[in-house]
Structure formats: C-alpha cells, structure tokens
Length: 85
Image (tube, rainbow, N blue to C red; front, side):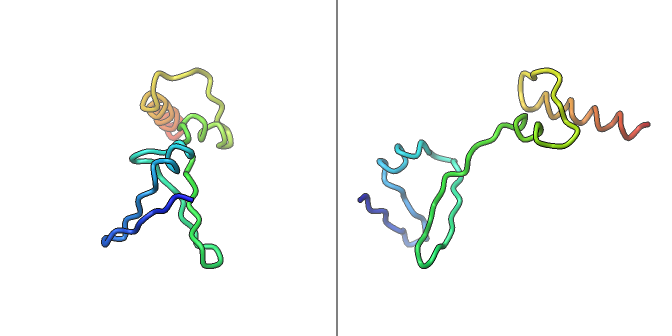
C-alpha cells in the first residue's frame, strides 16, 4: 500500500502510483471527507459547461459552440432578450 506524507504546512502529496491510477494531476480538485475516523479522498469529476446546462429546465442547446465562452455569450444574449420583453 503506497504511503503519503503530510508536510509541515498540512499539504498531502499523493504517491505517483495513486495519481496515475485515478487519472489525476496538478490542478485537479478532490473531495475530502471524514468517515468514521478515516479520510476519504475522491476525485471531483470535471464537467463541461454544456453538459451542466443541458440539465437545467428549459435549456435545450440548438447548436454546438466552438468554446465554453461562446456558449456563455449565447446564453447571456438569450437572457437579455427574455428580460427585454
């Protein structure tokens, strides 16, 4: 079992074998929970903005966007049109 060490600043370094097995790297976010005296660390799944918006009521993307920024701008424009009515 790989061993992780806690630094004097409270930072935890996960062994490379663990990072590789989970497919995580620098900048990735992890959920940290305490369960019955143990620590549970779970990688936070990355979600694309378009996937999140699909779940919102009343949203149905009509076309694909070149980037998240273009999608956000289109959503803002749609909101502006709704408020002008």
